[in-house]
Length: 150
Image (cartoon, rainbow, N blue to C red; front, side, top):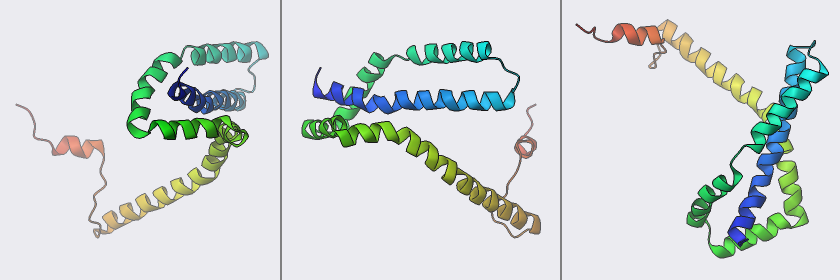
């Protein structure tokens, strides 16, 4: 296995961990939405989820990724990245990244969403007062504004 392939295999490790985290989160969400779901149904869904992940064409994905990495990284850079990801610190980084990302999104996303919602509300209020330069409209407005076909 050449260094590029080794690096790509190491780089895909977080994806596998992310899939496992997503399965776990989906399972918990399912249990919240359907508290009456039984262990047999959960086990069946776990098997289906695992089968889906196993069906991902990892080799094909690696083949697709190699030229992309070749365009963006030199051979010495790939060697350095491979050395890092092979080190204890790199392995910890790969292991912890999905959890760090999940925790970060849980904290950051509501703040982002609140700011987006507030900005949309301000824009709508400006539009209602006739002071806005941006008009928020619905798809119906677009449809009615189009010339009719004869």
